[in-house]
Length: 187
Length: 310
Image (cartoon, rainbow over the protein chains, first blue to last red):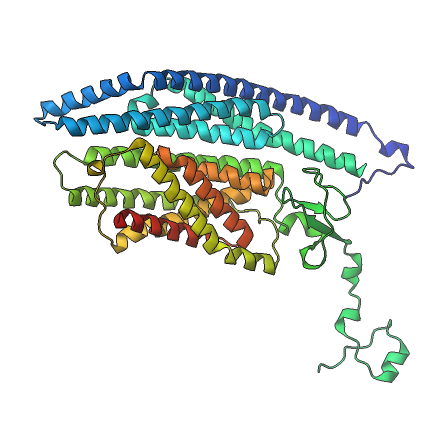
């Protein structure tokens, strides 16, 4: 794995290494740009997730009551009747579940913000985890409320594509850094 | 006792006089003389990547390399170092992971579709038996689709990197730790759900009555997930990511993907991530995919049994 440059022959120490290092640094700057863009996305998504879920946590009772009334009206039209004691038990349980879910999403938002801070240090794990968390959360919301998948679909696709490109840029960036580190050790 | 080979010009007359058969290993093969010196590699204990043994520090993660003796050294011929070593280039890892991501998204999509179909198939007024039958058939169908997706993923990834080298003793210890890992994961899972239930207080009458044991139940909820999910996550994803980020990071990132794949039980995702990490460590410590498959299937079987026992 040693360098094959013949130091006795000056012509072997050509301009090619500096030319290649120039093009390499251009590629590296493009990758850094991708990572910076991903950092911006993580900060935006993280802050938005935290804000929305703090609001949901605070207004959980009203949200649960609205949803319960909507479903009960639908079932009443089909001729169903309700045991109010059981409805109250379910309502209490639903409020606890939604609060827990909102806290979990606040933690996910915080994870996005932490990832934005660590993206330069650990580019590959941070970009992959961010992408998986974002897509996973979108899928969970798709289960709970299928109509939510189509809301803001264009923005969601843009975010996913940007995160996928960030993963690829992170892997290439890390490869370049490790090659440079190896060359430094060899030299 | 084999007959000695034909005497080569390099043999000394004294050998012939003494009647000693010249072993094949002493006869120099001309091509062997031309072979490059073997490059000795050692496994970095922090990131799990292969590093030339002459380096005092790992050039991937800068960890100080310990002195390793005997069978822990991996000697590779330099000419074939990149072919059979299982050490992919970062470019290969990026491409492989992009493909795996696509298959992961496909599996999430099939989960979503199966949930929607199940929700719309179950009508008000149906008996528990009917609900369970419909759910089981829909689950079977979509698990078959997931199996096909994973098999296609395995076929498209022609080169899956090997995990960190483990000696025979290390693998044996890994296997022996299997029951301990299973016990810890089950304890954590049961404890987590007990705490969750005490907070959420979901009424007992609202929970689905568990269906009876059957062979199809064991296949759908224990055997198929054990084999297919471990093949995808612990073999394809974890092995691919180890090349990009080291062993521990790959285990935890894979575990997060595994947890997030369980979109129908969002409140259980944190504990399922930890369970996934346990299977990941079992994969690495045992050096085999069989142990995590067994742990996964047994874990699901015990959880199903506990649901019925309670």
